[in-house]
Image 1 (cartoon, rainbow, N blue to C red):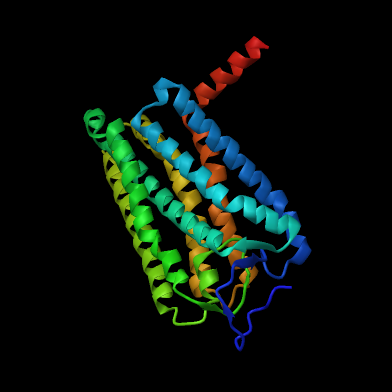
Image 2 (cartoon, rainbow, N blue to C red):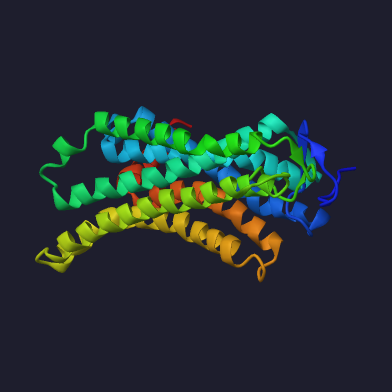
Amino acid sequence: MAEGPHLNSTFPRPTFFILTGIPGLGGTQAWLTLVFGPMYLLALLGNGTLLALVQIDSTLQQPMFLLLATLAATDLGLATSIAPGLLAVMWLGPRPMPYGACLAQMFFVHALTAVESGVLLAMACDRAVAVGRPLHYPLLITKARVGYAALALALKAVAIVVPFPLLVARFEYFRAKTIDHAYCAHMAVVELVVGNTQANNLYGLALSLAVSGIDILGIAGSYGLIAHTVLRLPTWEARAKAFGTCSSHICVILAFYVPGLFSYLTHRFGRHTIPKPVHILLSNIYLLLPPALNPLIYGVRTKQIRDRLLETFTFRKSQL
């Protein structure tokens, strides 16, 4: 039986933690697999299909769609880093996770979230150039530059997130082995350690504000430039067409940042008024909802992808 978090008892660094899922729900959380299971399936099928389309169709190998493929790959990684363990805990009950695997999951979840935020900023800049400087777009936004941007985002995420597991690994003693969460979130593990966790708390807060804050400011600036350009167009039809090129991206931004902002605010400022199970449920939705929705949004709203999908299914039907 797993030890609870008693303040008067300490344990040497455990070889494994026990993830309990959403505390207080007990066996009823198995029903949540009916929500998170289809979300993960949608993420796998949708993002896998998008990556396959971009790979096999040369007309989609343009900067905008390569950025979309980067987003799809990030979504696949993010969903896969959390969903299998999450579904196992909810369906089978509390599950052990090795200490090293816990730190690895902590790294990948936070790093891929940072990459996704950066990709959304890159896509906003791409749309700003496409709308504001359409004649210069082929010269300014090239496939090589998209590749460099993706590499830079990955390196940046690794550099800023590596301190998370390192700051946890320095602690030798813990109050408990049981993590009241569905995955190894940084702050959920920090709550169990014995020692001064001020550095962990400050770095977590600073990183959240810096990464999300800078990316949101960049996205807002890009859309400010887009709005300025669109409002100067002479006709309503021209404005609608220019704005339509950005509509999918706006939906994806809202799907990523609105649940994330709500989850962050309730965790930081509502911990005494909003029950802990709600915090944990929100954090899981925040990580799994965007990967499930993004391919649907782009599949429905982007003409080239929609047409290519229809062509593929029509061709297969004609063969049968």
